[in-house]
Image (cartoon, rainbow, N blue to C red; front, side, top):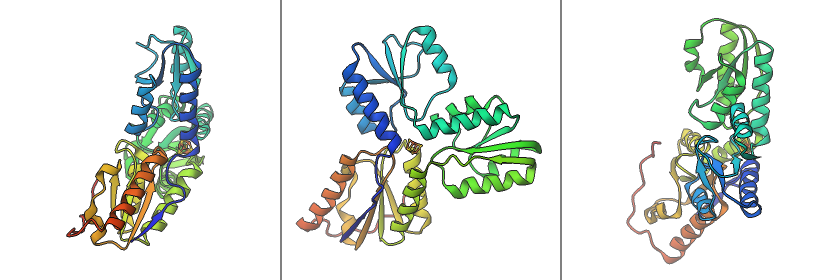
Length: 294
Ligand code: SF4
């Protein structure tokens, strides 16, 4: 069995920066430190932070400590106002690429464009960007989702940083049909694009693709979707405990990638487990798993 491990698997620049910021803040600040929402969409990392005394809270309201860390997804502008009023110190770990998307959302709103954000309206990053884009902001997960928009004079389009380029392109193309003027800022981050392309490239070469990361992680779920689109059996797993020895019975090549919020130690444990199973000859009698649906 051969394992093809993606070079870009695991933490991206923005997540590494947010985790370092949270760890440094917890070490350096006296008093209670918390994060606004779970720091990243990975339950294992969030548990480790809790062990250090850093818990997620919903927001400034109801927080009685002195320091809050803003995660890489960013927050609406109202959070900065609330914090100042409440005397809560904010440590801002918003990813610079997300900040970029927030700034473009403000700019488009100020210039009078109806802002269309391509992404998942329930994702905290999108909820933050929406607040910069104004009351008229419209969130579309894909081109079909633009149905409620009707004819618009001027549309400004931006993207959630982790959506696939193809989806962004199709929404932009649809906007050209419904608006007199379309202004586009491609705010998809490069780390995401490179990771997605590499994952699909590996998926095309293997019998089984493993995508490692939190089930609540949007970018990991999208990676798994993109790998499935290649036709290769793809399994989204969170930890080594889900590795099934039966997989080794029917595969010659396994590909592994991981979402931007997946720590390196979780990926390493999975690779080591697969090597161990291979060396020990375990895994006899397995059957090929069905394509997993998330
Ligand atoms: S995926 Fe990109 S935008 Fe999101 S945190 Fe990582 S580097 Fe920043």
